[in-house]
Image 1 (spheres, one colour):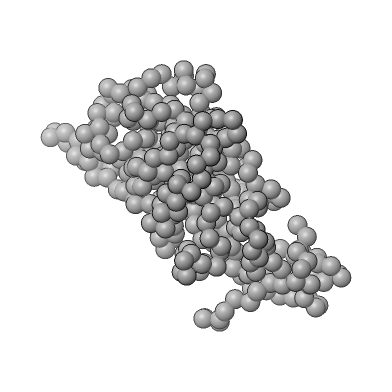
Image 2 (cartoon, one colour; image 1 turned 90 degrees about the vertical axis):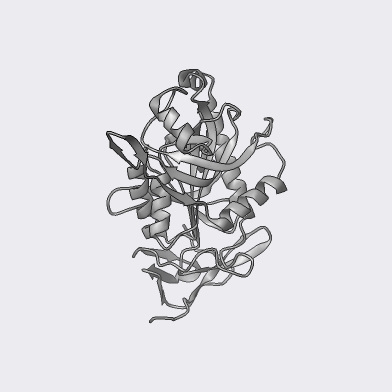
Length: 321
């Protein structure tokens, strides 16, 4: 019924000394990556992972991040804005998340960025839009600002936790600046594309290939809070192959994943952010899951509605996975 308050399941999730009721509305975040090395870096922080199959064949995993009150759904999109946007839409429809992060690696456009640095995108430029005629190329870009709440939480995370992002390593710099997203792997500071980015998107400090699609999906889903976090794996001012041989893509992916994990741990609980919801309530796609609790009690959740067969389970007994 319209306006009906969702009923609460008789279980609790506890983290950081606080317990939160698990409601029929999924209390999840989505973290997407483009490459397997990025996915593995994020996945390493999660426990109790369970696969979830989208009807079209896409496989996500849902797990817990120790120390955080959220469940996290993760997926790998492959390279490119188109695929990233399509799979982001599938993730939003399937999990009805409170927020969405895209975590991975990027190439530096500025020579002052160090390999391994982390860039939190304050704005994402889709730089390929334009008109090309006898007068030359005229840019018609699209852009998306980062979610204000998530950007502020990311800045707080960078200030509040000065530890290195990986054990035994130096702490990389955390930058809050725009990123450019297109469909080209750029590895030259003097190519026509590099000159275009320098003249028309001069405040973009890094380049990648997925965030425009993900930001578009977030925007078209009721302005779902969305944020991009990238580790710098190479630079257009040096050979990409040299950075790969030195292992920088793997290290940059670890840095981005570590910072994302810290951000999620500092994110206030699913019920509110400073007295207000992180995002408007959303309804997950229809999904049936049957769990057996102690005493032989069975309950099911379908399309956000709860059906209990028999007496409700003990509040202190979580459902079996």
